[in-house]
Structures are given as C-alpha cells and as structure tokens.
Image (cartoon, rainbow, N blue to C red; front, side, top):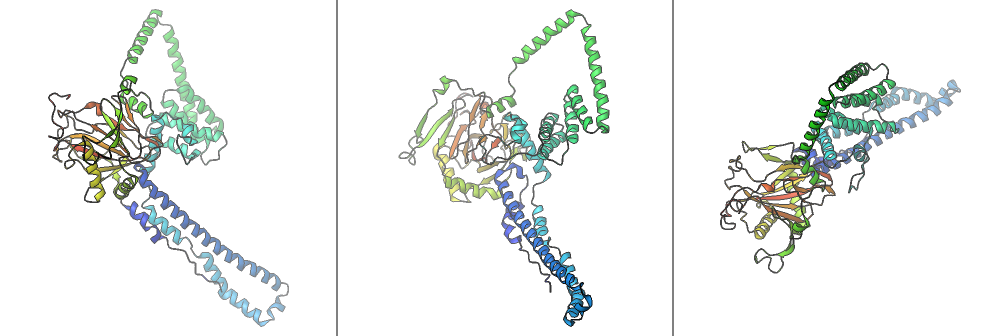
Length: 547
C-alpha cells in the first residue's frame, strides 16, 4: 500500500534569528551591513526550495515505480485475461488495487508538497526589500555612474575598480534601470541604459525583453533631450521590426514634421542680414568667455574630489605637512607609547591618527550597532528636528558608555588625544553606508541662521569632529572638503580630527565637507561630535573671529 506521508523539514526555527534582525528595519539599500542579512535569508530560501524539489522528485519516483509495476502486470494479464483471473489471488489483488490502491495513488498525486516552501516564503516575504529599496539601489547606480564618470557598459560588465566578486548585468537589469530613470523623468539616464540594453540584445543575449520595447523608450528619451534627428533614426529601426507599431508610426510623422520645421527656420535665418549674424557670433563668443570665468559649482567640485581630481595642495604647502609621534603635551597615558599622528591638510587643519582603534574594538562597535541601525537623519535647519534626507544614504546608531565599558574607553581616548571635554559631547555615532552610500556637502556646526540647531542639547555648538574609519573601502568613499579642495581617504583603524569653530566660537566655513559615494566595498565609520560647553578652559576663546 502506498504511503501518503510526505515529510518536509521545518525551517521556521532555523530562520528565526535572521528574521529577528530584519524585522525592525527597512531601507535596506542604505546599509551594506544590514544587506548581508538578506544574503543569508536568500540562502535559507534556496535550501527550502531544494527540499521542495526533492520532495516532488520523490513523489514522482514513487508514482513512476507504481506505473512501471502495473505496466508489466497489465501487459501479462491482458495476454490471457481469463486465465490470469482464474487464479483467485490475482482476482483478489485486482479488486484491492481498483478499490483501494488507485485511490491511494490519486491522493498521492494530489498531495501538496509546497506547504513547507510556501510557508517559509510567506514568513520571509514580509521582511523582503520593498519597491523603495529597489528604486533606491537603482538610483544609487546612476549616482555612481555620474560621480565617477562610468559608462553604462563598464557597470554592466562589472568591470569596476577593486571588485572581488564580478557581476554582470542582463538585458532585463539594464532595461529596469532605464525604466526607473524614465519614471523619474530622467531622460539622460533612460537613454544610456536603454542603449545598453539594445547593445546587449544586438550582441545576441537572450532576453524576455524585445528590441521593439527598448527602441520605443530609447527614441522617446532621445527626443525629450531635443535630438529629433537621432530619435527619428531609432523610430525607423523600430518600424522595421514592427511596421504596425501605432505609437512609432505617429512619432515618425511628428519627428519628420518637426525636422522640416527646423530646416525652414534655419533657411530663414540664413537670409538675414550678414552683419546681424556676425554681431550675434561676437555676442555668443563673449557669452562663452564669460561662462568660462564662472566659479566651478560645488557639486562639480565635490564629484571631482571624489574621483581624486582637483585637489588643491601645492608642493609648497605639502612640504609643510608632517607626521610625528604625539603624546598631547605629555599626557601620562602616551608619554611612553605616543600615537602616530600625520597632517592631512593645513587650512582647515586636519590630522589623522594611525592605528588608533583595534580590530577587536571595531568589531565590537559594529556588533553593538548593527541590530539598531536606522536610516541616518539630518537636523532640520529651521525646526531642529531630525529627519531623513535623500542626500544622506546611510544607516546609523548611537552607542553610549553605559552599554559597554569599551565605549567609555574609546571616549576617554578621544579626550586624552584632543584635550577636549567629552561629558558634553554627543554619543558615539556609528554609520554604515549602503549602495552608493554618501552624505552630500554639509556643515557639522550650526550657522548663524540656525540659532536653534542644538538648543535641545544645551551644550552649545559643535566645536570639533572626530571621525573613526572602521573599514577600508575598495573604491570611492572619501571624505572631501569642496571649498578647499581637500580629500581624505578611508583607512581602517585610523581617525581624523578637525575643529569646526575658531577659538572665538565663530564657524569655520572651510570645514564644509561630504562623504563621497561608495563605489565598491563596505564603509563603516563612527564619529564623535564635540560641543562647546566644558571647553572654556581647555580651548580658550580668541580675541578675533579668525583666532
């Protein structure tokens, strides 16, 4: 008799630890550290899927054995039906098979072996990334493409600097990026990624996306950028593939009409007075000359520095930067074992401390922070309320000395090396950057037009910033200062320090800085924002604003 019992392992308990760590979080794309949990979740899902496949294969094998046995039996029986049934045992077994065993076989065939897998999938689906995560990750790729001047083919083939695990994009991936850009009315990136999808299709890659669909998006994106002639070329290609495409037929007529209109306008322009044309040409040249003298926009300077370009440190100034053993005016803890300190920049003065935090301490900080990482916030300059912002792509957590003695030890180390009071400083903030993670140019201190920036803390303005780098970054992720052309690159186990305020208490606007997008790798940092209160005798006020 066939047994109906189908045993599948229960994965609920096995997955519980992963789900607990994911249950309180969203915005996965903003933290690479938390995205690692998704890899383990997916691995467990694959294991559950394989169990389901084995159960299905086992069921089919049993059905196959039953069919083979009956095939042999019926072949022999039908040669001499009366003689076969003349044996009373054969007659009994025929009654039993048709009355009982075929019913059992029917139940076996109808039995559902998907319960275990579907149950696991349903449980985990509520912790999956959302549409917002997918869109956020896609926009991060576009941001990396712009910041680091990468062409679509370089990204699609996975040929990024410093990569260990090369991954290529399919036609569907490129098409999806183009669609997200299109939904955002970003026709520039729509063109780049639809063109890449078309390129891969023309190279023979198999895909569920056809050329007609890609060309439809591509021609429209090009038209929206004002290049009607190129849009017409792609529309004609589309109609060669699908002559009955209604939108393309309408676009063809419209584009031809617009081009004819442009040609007539150009001919009319030629008939105008020659002197007017010359005068216009001079005016255009003058305008171009004026444009060339304009100051480079901050965004462009920021992206240049992220690429390692435009660093404004002359050889003369660089010769004045030194490295040294440092004990902060004979601090007892560092007299016999001073730390290594090196100058990173002169104005503003930025120093780096080497090997200032151990691997054990960094791992402990990550371990404490990871379960409580939340989308990083910024202080609203008007209300002072913390809120998320699209220009800060990371997750952060705050660690206090009450949670682990090691945090107190680190805080004391910062106090010993800076000579500044830590009792009025903010708690240690730990940040992990996600896909293309960045923090666009900003000030750490509150400006004059933000009098209530840190009013709730009651500790004054942020006098200084201490920043630990807790990971190496394969590519990207620099801390840059656009106004002065400075770039500081992540180096695991080091920390950088600078003053945000002059001794007078006035803000140093040259400290405006940014965290460049992480191109390849995982960036972990922790920072300590040190406030004015308690520093009155440790860093006396100057007599002038710039002192």
